Image 1 (cartoon, helix red, strand yellow):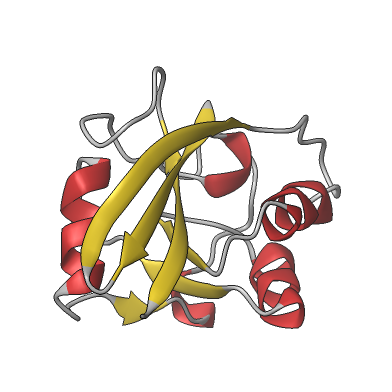
Image 2 (image 1 turned 180 degrees about the horizontal axis):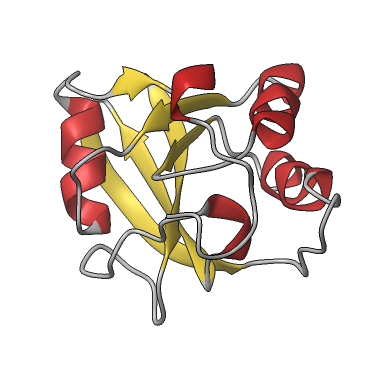
Length: 128
């Protein structure tokens, strides 16, 4: 049995029909999706933690502490990307996905690309 725990930065109220949050550290919350054998088995939400300038590791550690293995994001800075790599969370670029469900389906179909330095921004709100 293959199981993955995916986090997607989301707008309130969260869930599969919510919009993808454009910057992981400043999102309203995270939609957490458990996928078992290629099928969504559960969907829940996880509140975001306060994000202050330079405090990019707080949300990284928060997600790692909640068992997240994969993050699908629209944007983030280089520091949190390096942090996710350090804690073993694979990050994928959400690209054109507007809704959480679209992003998860794109991931499961293998069409999302790994988040690399070329997708990073300078951080802060208003960047995406």
